[in-house]
Image 1 (cartoon, rainbow, N blue to C red):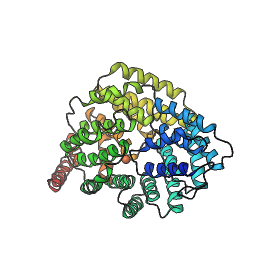
Image 2: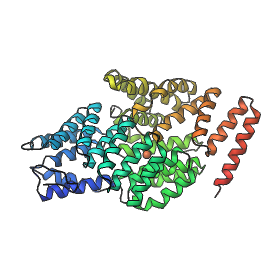
Image 3: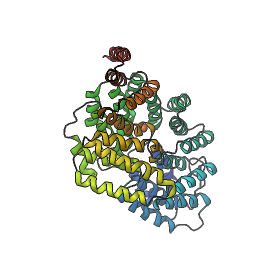
Image 4: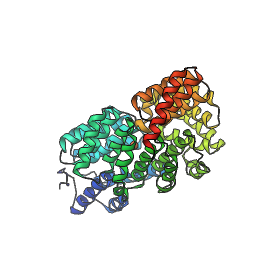
Amino acid sequence: MRDGQGLEVANADANAIEALDFLREEWLVFGKHLDRFVTAADTEEKCALLPVMAANLVLSMNSAEGRALGQRHLARAMTMTRSIGPREQAWIDATQAWVDGDSDRTLALHEKMVAQWPRDLLAGKLGQLHAFNMGDAEALLRIGEHLSAANPENHYAWGMHAFGLEECNRLDEAEAHARKAIGMQRRDPWAHHALAHCLEARGRLTEGVSFLESVSDTWEDCNSFMYTHNWWHLALFLIDLDRTDEALALFDGRVWGVAKEFSEDQINAISLLARLELHGVDVGARWSEVSPYLEQRLHDHFVPFLDLHYLYALARAGKQSAVTEMLASLEDRAERAKPFEREAWADCAVPAAHGLAAHARGDYAEAARLLGQAMPHLQPIGGSIAQRALFGAIHLDALIRSGWNDAAVKILQADERERPAVPFTKRALADLYRKLGRAEQAMTADYQAAQLARRYAP
Ligand SMILES: [Fe+2]
């Protein structure tokens, strides 16, 4: 039989096809009923693709529990391999590689799948997830190109292509693709997300807020990752607009509290708290509300980008023994890194983790030194440009607080060129120019900051 995308599915009856079509739509729209597919996969006895896809679903949770469940689903799929086709075999191989923690092989297998079966939108979705976790923007884009070329009628394909373009800094094309997707279907939270990234990258702040607010009603049926992540994006715009009270309210009302045990929810919460603090906001006891959910993650090491978030949150919550244990575990993970992973774990994650711990305890000179060492190797740790920018912001804060004024000015001037309408950047520059005795530049920056504040005033 064939699924709704016209792809052959081995050993499938009408129920299996219905389950697979449901999964594709529900995954691509980031719906909250994916558990229904897992239930269907659990009772399936012939069609290997169902348990394979269930394995991918639970593996994407980035947790020890998800990994164990994924192994179980994959083992069930292996018992259904009689007369399967090449696509089922490719999915099994890629899933096995993921279970084995072989991330470069997993991504390579997905890229091959997408090239061979570009109508398989979930092969593309998962391939992009693997590319994202490795910070491989080019692979993200290559996959997106295949998808939109083979599925021009499908808005999800344009949204996935848009995100690949954005991560490659091809912002005009990315914006056009995201708007095309939204024009085809208003309820496409991933296309909203791609457009949010485009607007964020250029510092188009008020536009970012009004666009996201205008589509936020469609996120009510989203799973916790997409829901909390799109609200997180809205909070970033608010912070840059100096509307930090509203951003803090979004933390309390939208970003934290949906599914506290999920990795992605935790990352969004941690990143938002850290950014609020960097903008001078007192976040009260919120670190202590998040940290209990992180104490079982000290030895996770699924993606370095995730680990660095957990570690910073534990450090800000004052969980010293957990921090010490996690730092040792990270060093051990870096020593075991395969050659292609060394830059992410050894060159970036280890010094960055020590630097983040130093920043959290107020040792800013040490934080600036260690984060400075890690920053040139940031991309392969995974995550998006906007998410990784948190570590740049903490590094910058450490530079400023420890008096490395020249280095801080250079970073802020680069920020200002890319995102010229952010008052915080102008104010920070004005302060530094004053410290460096550059009075005229300080006055100009102050004036521009005041003008922007007037422009953004409610
Ligand atoms: Fe994002």
